[in-house]
Length: 354
Image 1 (cartoon, helix red, strand yellow):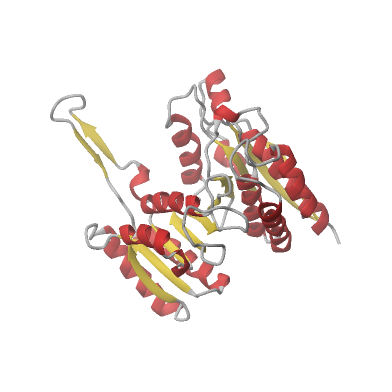
Image 2 (cartoon, helix red, strand yellow):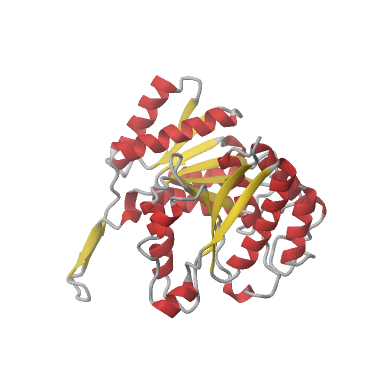
């Protein structure tokens, strides 16, 4: 029987991205050796340095080239010498749209030994998933500006969704809830009392799909402002949350802080029928570049998510157990320079425990 093999496109990106990606690959290699599959990595230089040298943000062939891979492993995008928005929109958003990565999957899980700013909350209380619609809504840039620079300037950016986009996201969220098999509760996060057109569509689809095809899943609805309050006060209420692009962007950063910060938060940009991209949630942290002090756990956890998405669930679970052992018994802090270990040493600890 031949060994199963996966082709992985690696985008180390900017700042500390290459450092955390290296540790992620170290752990992925350890898992692949133990669990009997092969990972074939191909690196791409998309990011700030390439843009500064060539003036090109992303080659036109990028999406078609990346479609040939089983998954994409991303480090970080963002360069101090490049105006904010150029790389983020030109690489991250463009790839999400062109690869139709219509789901952003964000586990919010507090690991043992990790401090949370939420008083009296522990790992048993903070363990849920946010499913964010990732290619529609207000981030598509529908709108425009007239009379720019005058006192009468008008700026419009519209939150546009069609039923197809909404339904495929909601169906994916129901499937996640069923597979997770925890509280079997899916909550729609929206703003039906003010954004009455868009979230009327979301709410109708949510209940229609749930009643017809997922009667075993309990359905709940929360306004986005109430969601933010309860994520702080009662995070144990949540199992899976589904929401639109903008609200998902906001509440997942709040969730990341409750699970210990950007140094531990990982996410996936998923096309369930195509190629998906996995990344740490934190930025490129350029002030720590080359110092070997940045926390690589978010990148390691995004690699863990990638393996689970590829079907290598046992290997993913082994990585998570090792990360939990490291957070519980070894690290002093998740903050850069305060971990008690270097970036590479943390990678070594996790790889050894897989």
